[in-house]
Image 1 (spheres, helix red, strand yellow):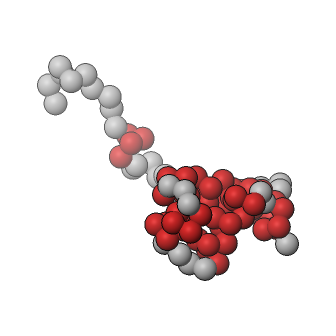
Image 2: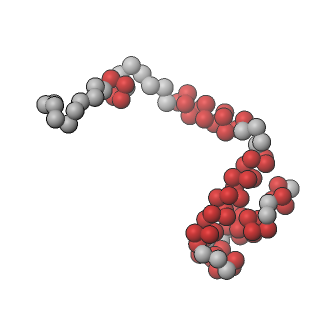
Length: 91
């Protein structure tokens, strides 16, 4: 199991936060650390799990491609046609 490959500190934070569904405050109290430390451990634990489960990043690339396909910019896109002006020029 991928969780067993995490360091004990990251694994405990992930287990309490994700599996037992404790709040940040409850997790911090149970581990005896601050809330920002819990946030960091959960963030890094999730990132390591993601890399372990999808080492080549294929899932992330597919998801990004789907998002990009859904946001095709047309010729009338505001940002594409917008002309840059100086703040001193009259509009």
